[in-house]
Amino acid sequence: MKRLLLMGLLAAAVMCGCQSTFGPKLGMTEKQWLHRTLIGDLVYMSGSVKAYRSHGVYYYFKDGILVRIDQGMIPPERIQVEVTVKSE
Image (cartoon, rainbow, N blue to C red; front, side):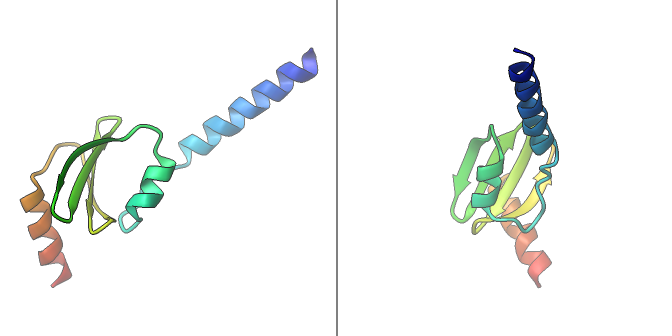
């Protein structure tokens, strides 16, 4: 019984540790982000720009690459312009 309890606690600690170490980074792919994010809601999809919300934070992808992380929702046109300006 103690062994089962210990194994359960160890599994829970490992799962919590894995979750807390995930920090999305600009430049990561949308596929990587979706694979590591437990709860992510698609907010909009406009052309090559997608926005997701997870735990009150907005994640913006352009052509499948994470280009911005923000606390508020930003229109797709603004993301498009910001990415274009940065790449010049």
